Length: 525
Image (cartoon, rainbow, N blue to C red):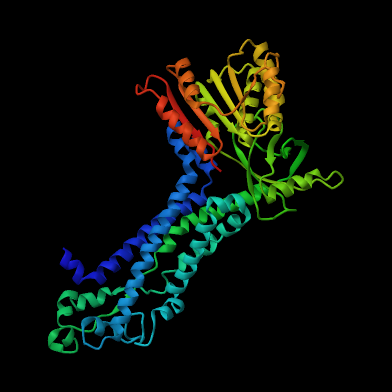
């Protein structure tokens, strides 16, 4: 086997390039389909399946990244294999030893002959072929596009220079166009069926010196470019993507009326809006565009309103150039209200919150927004005495760095406290607020007033905790209180917190499927 590989290394490299191309196209088809079918639509289609199947959709961003890594890997394999092939082509073209490779390389590039070697003369270089052939030039273009997309998608650039990431990632349009025409040049060639019928490849390869001798019954072989395949893999996903973009454009052009604007502490803007035909579920998100800032930038924001309300709302925190500009625009008192375009809503993991008997909601900073929608919906369900509510207990944890952040939904928590007391369901909602940033003077003041009925920071009956939750203690308490329940854990927060909660879910889930089981869910945008 080793000797065969050594003696036929050119064939091996060709096979590697071919396999790399097919795997390359396969993962591209997955990426194209993932781009073409929005997460929300797929989640709705699978709505009648078990939640365990739909939960896999919550890893859509991880899947997107994994496909991207696969594309990079097989792009490297594809390029390296072809570079070796071209180097072999170049040496075969320059050879004068009368070998089979030399004779095949010297088949003339004329209409009545079919060539095999893309390097047409001994003076032609690999670089020249790369930048003058369809396959080479498109290969360079899509490789550069891929490098730009991958490097600009790094987390540091995404968070610090979102516009760079946003615009660069849309180079995928050029990328897929180049991929579609990459194989049209026919640089990968094979012997024609007619030529193989007239000349047995293995037999005639042994008598290549007598091809012109009628007694050998062998003629010079004829070659043709293999048909382009890449367009077949991206055609259907491309059509779906174009259809989805048209649908999103149509929806985004529907009129949005801003009914209320509220400025909250810590640079948070609340927009309450109305749009004809808009329908939502708890925890969903929308894409928002402000044409006066940028016609092309669309940013995701979680809905903080409840499905039972006659409006939908979002809370926007200043964390980048676009959000800061938007907030400054709305802060101008005597200027007209800027026009807002909305696309959505789209589904998230939080939609399944009411499928669990016990729910644990963990929000970090502005990550509380999907749970505000859930808590509001619970308030309405109790108002209307909804008998279909499966959830029996909710644990809510809100972790903030700034004291003023708790004012965002202070009224909501106060209303829930009052509603639970009036209905005799004080134990339904167990919420805890954690402040991770404070000074010693305030902490001392809070300690002196700890015995008061209401918290001095929020005015709520539940006291604010200083520091971070001890998750082992929290999960242990929940597991003890609900020994036979399915507990859904929902997070909207940083990855470090996600790792801690995911670990606790595995650690405190019972090996007995009939006992307590923790199911981790994380918001992904």
